[in-house]
Every structure is written in structure tokens, then in C-alpha cells.
Length: 360
Image (cartoon, rainbow, N blue to C red; front, side, top):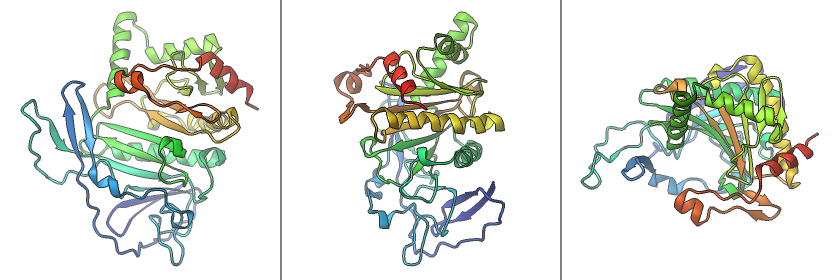
């Protein structure tokens, strides 16, 4: 794989990940783009002790454009996109409508009279495009392409983790209009947060408490318990196990754990990265076969924080869907949205059995 970094017309970075060894010729971006106008900030919720990002400039972002105006397709004569090159394999670039932005030196007045509660939404948001085929989906990709995407995730995790102020790197994919996807071209996103996210903090607390109480490794013990029980395991490979968690919140939810506990994507070996490609594609095919239709989903990589409490974190991928039956979606109702108490209409054991049955 060859990596080539360039700049877009407004100065944003774009990185090509080419599967061949040929040197990529520089491709200037001829668009006349004004500087990106952003005003992201973070406000602190003193009750939940969580940061909320406010990014009002994103109201004007691209929303469900027609296929012939897709900003993620390769550029051609007469139609210039976010990717200046006429072809590419995998490409990452800074989001033109980011939720998090470089620190621009703004001084923000406090909100209310409590503790310091307002700061610039400092960080970085990138788009990772999985291929030039507008009509493809991740499940349609070859194992080789998935390995290239994995290499891009590793590269961007390393690069973003090295930025000042970044505390956590989050790679994810949203698929399907039911999830709220606004661009149909196959792509994911990468966020570099200036704080450790609330869910990660809670998971780290659980892992540390479990270690104090039992002397054990929470992630390793969860994986071992699922492997021994077998009833919720969906698929396995040499280096990974995919299973439905015993307390699944979503009607379709699969977690993929590496057999060797590692903190993040860069810590995986080449063998583990390659093995993931085959297993993940198998899981995605099962998900689409579940209701004989493309399944809307969120695929979220959980990585250890960049600096603090790294020894308590562990890498894993969580894939979940709002579809609970053909033609039916799970909406977050009063208990979920109001109290954070999930009610699942599908037993995890039944979901796992069904996913095993629809496999090859």
C-alpha cells in the first residue's frame, strides 16, 4: 500500500491509500473554496458531568445530494468533488463541516455561574471513503480493500493521537437512511476528541473496579465466557470472535473482540488485521441476510484513550442496528431517551441463533 498526502483548495489535508505501488501524481484541487467557517464549542453538563458539542455551522452541510452531485465520488471534467483525483482506492480528508475544529484562540464567556463550563470544540473530524464506487457498501468490498481500510484506520489513529490535546480517537461507520446517513457513498468518519467520551469513561471505571474486586481482566473474561457458553457466538476465526452480548441493548447487536487483548488498532499485528477482514465481511453478510435486505447499522471502534488510563481500555468493534423486524424500527422511546434504560424486544440468544442460521 502507498500513502500520499496532499492539500485541498482551502488547505484541508487529504490522504490517499493506494493498493498498488505506483507513485500517485499530485492532483491539484482547482475549486475556488472559501476558508471553512466553523464555530464549534463545548458546553459542560454539570449534572451528568459530560461535554456537549455545539456546532451550529453544520446546519448547512451537504444533505442527501443526487448521485450525480455526490461530493465523495472521484472528480471528473465538469464536476469537481472533495476528492480531486479521477480514481482512488481509499481516501481520508478533513471534514468541511466538522463537529470539532482546531483551536482558533477564541475566548468564550462562561455559561451561568457554576464551574468553568464552556470551551472551544477543539479536535479534528475526518471522512474516510471506502472506495470510488458510489453504489457499493462495505459488505461489497473485497478482503483486500478491507485490509486497506484497516491500514487507514491504523494510520489515522496514530496521526490523530499525536495531535496536541487529543484524548481519544473514534473510528465509525453509519449505514442507511434509518441511521441518519446524509451521503449514500460508502464512507465512515474519524473523530479526534479533546476528552475521553462518557461511555468510555464508564467502561474504564467498570474494568478498573472488576480488576480491584477479582484481580481479573474484564474484557478477557467477557470474551472467554462467551466462547465457553457458545450460545451467543455468531462466528469465529483464528484471531477474532463475533458474538451477541448477553445484555444486548439493540435488537441486532454484534461485538467483535480480538483474541489477544490490545489497547487500539495500531497494536494489532498484520495477521490480526488480515484475519479481521474475512470475519467482518462474514458478519456483515449475515446482517444483510437477516431480513433479506441491507441492514442499517452503526459500526463503532472502541479504543483505549490516548493518554490516561490506557491500561484499562481494550480494542473491540461494536455493530448494532435499529431494525427489529422487517419493516419495523426500534425508536428510542421514553425509557431509553429519558432514563437511559434500554428495553430489547429480541433476546440475545435468539438473535445469535438467527445470525448463525443465515450464514454460509
